[in-house]
Length: 503
Image (cartoon, rainbow, N blue to C red):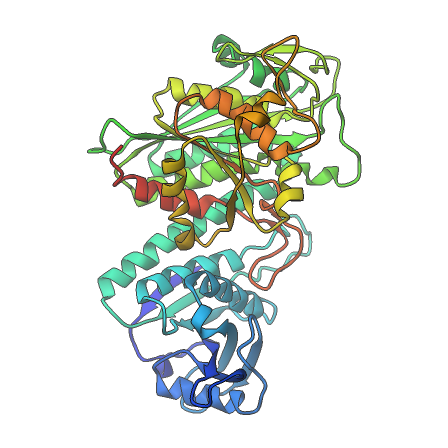
C-alpha cells in the first residue's frame, strides 16, 4: 500500500473515496444527555456540509462502525464520501480511530475500491491521529485467504492521510506507523501459514531473511546446539518430531546504545501442537498451527525495532519445534532437566509451551538480558479467565510491569494483569522432581506463569499469555478473522520507551 501525507484541504483531493469520522455529542444546550447530536469531526466546512446532508437524513447517527456512503458529494472532488461512526465524542480515542481506519479499508475492499483519503478527526493530537489511521488501515488491509485458487487481489493501492500541522513531524509519525503496521502484518503472515509450510526450519529461514533485510544479526541453531546448551526441557518437546527444531537468536545492537539494559524478547514457536502423547481432541486441532504466534510476535517486533532504531539493545529468542506423538516422544511421567538445572516431571505433554520457554528464558539471561518479556499462546485457562478480549499479563516486578502498562494506551492493545504469587508455584511442586509441568485444573494461567517465573529467577520479567487474543475467532469491522498480530505494537512501543529508561 502506498501511503502519503497531504496537507492540502480535503475538498481538493481527487480520490475514489474520502473518509470522515462522525461522532456523537450530547446536546448540552438543552441539557439532554439522551438526545444525539452527530457531527463530522473535522474543521473543513465543505466536508462538514457534505456530511450534514447525510446526517440530517438520519442515515448515520454516529454509532460505532456505522457507515454511510454519499456519491458525488457537493463541494468535494472525491467521487465518494464515506462517513464512519466513532461513538461518543467524549470517549473517542486513538484506539477507536485505529479501528475506524481498518473498518473504512475493509468497507472499500468489499466494493473493489483501491484508494482512499482519510481525514484526521479533531479531538486527538494530529501526530497521534496519523499513526492510528496508518496502523489501522494496514491491519484492515490484511486477509488470510492466501491459498484460495480463485483469490482476487483486493489490496488497497493507496492511502492518503489528510492532516494539518508540522509536515516533518507528521511525516515521521506516518513513517513510524507504516513500520509498525507492516510488522504486525508480517507476524500475521507467519501465523497464518499451515504447518506443512511453516516448519521450524522455514520459520528460522523467514527470521533469517528478515534480519538480513533489516540489518539484524541472526543465529539459528539445531538439535546439536540445543543438547550442547543442556536445554533438556526444549529438547524433551522437540524429540518427538521428525522435523528438526530451531533455536532462533536475533540481535539488535545499535551504535551508541548503553551496555545495559538489554531487553530480552522470548517467544514460544510451536509450529504445530498435537499435544504430543497427551494428544488433543481432533475437533479444532487444525488451528494449532497458530501455536507459534508468540515466536512470530517476537520476530515481527524485532523487525520493527530494527527499522525504528531505538537506542537500546534487544535480543529476540524463539524456541521453535513441533509437538508430536511418536515412538521418540516424551511421555507423561518422564523427567527432564532444564538448562538452569531444575528438574521437571512431565505430567501432561500438552503443557509443552512452558518447557520451551523455560530454556528460552534461561538462555536469554545467559546472553546478558537484564529484562525479559515472553509471549506465548500458553493456556486455555487464560481464555476462561479473560475471554477473547484481553492478553493475560504476569510479572515478578511491579515497577517493570507499571512501566510496560503505561504504553498500552498508546498501543491500543487490551491487557490485564493476573496474579503469579507463591501459592500458584506450590501447585506445581513435584514429589519426584523440582517441578511438574502442570499445576492442576484450577488457576491454570497463573500456575503456568508461576512455572515460568522460576526460570526468570530474579530478572525483571513479564509474561504475555496471548492464547485468547492471537487469533480472531470472527470477522470484525476492522480486522479479518484469523491471526491478529497481538502484542507487536505494545512490544515496539515499550522498546522505544525502554530506550530512555535508566535502571
